[in-house]
Length: 463
Image 1: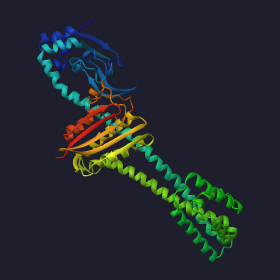
Image 2: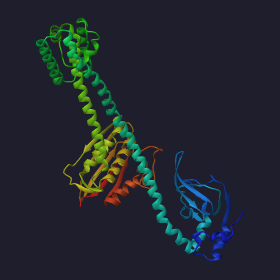
Image 3: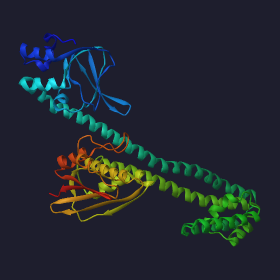
Image 4: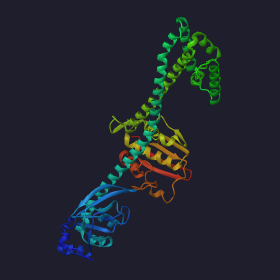
């Protein structure tokens, strides 16, 4: 085993306040290694081998997520890495590998504890680094979680927006075809010799059909099919080419044999064109309504995203807490749509408005609702209730899932703790949710769990 020379360690600032005798103690317990670029010195979430003293070269730190490695930063010689984990007996928060060929002296964890406890200058220097290191790692983790949350919700919203966008695109294409028919009808009437008086009566018949269609209720599937078959048969008897294409809109307008016979009497040879004209008018009105509904749906989703993020309203806003909950349910609608989960609301609408960090509080509702949905799977009841609880506004998010195992319950508010697989959930941990409630809003987040019912309770001060 090769030991470093004490002079080699003098360049490391961890030892700036040590005399030569104290520095020699570190050199006597260190193992000098030459490592090649790409060699891994510590794995994330594994017990670290000890304190690494980087004497030459560069080490690269990264956060692992499945098979992916997200760069965190680089350490350039001379420096020291891993003292905090070695002292606390924790696990490595990052994966550490050599970015270049490097020379490293390793002091085993047990020896680190022994030396640090007897050398106050080293102890104090390490302690000064604890807070900034943990703050930096926590911030990076939270940013990663929020990006994961954004990606998850963006994918869901993209799916939700795709449906009305596709419907509007299809309706617009069909509307163009209907308008083409409407534009060519006058030419057919002129070519067939339809007189002005007959054309006037045909317009009256068209208007009557449009009014009937607007007033008509929605028929059941069987009744609608029977009505279409009857109209299609009548059109075949009249010799209308491809009458089946016109049967659905005409049947929806409730036209009968007398109406069809009158059109035939007035239009004569232009009967197919007249019926296609009426059907195109009915279709165009329905398509316009469909486009309006699709674009309104997209507008509502965009509005929900703006409301969710409180865009253009500043960081602190005065809100009705129910608005944030309902907006969150809209944003997470893609998760609920294809399940048998029922959402029940028990709101006290008399609760006063609160001044809060709106976007952050919505992240809390997102986390609690998303966790509840994941816990229940495809069936269950999500109950959201609000009420006054003394000087507090109380929000309960309850699910009918299997509950939280007893061995997991004490840890659910631990930083970075999760029971979900990689890629599942919003990414926002309950620790972050509780800090948003407690630190940012001076409230509390608690849980009451039992098989068949888990309730997360948020209390926010009314004052």
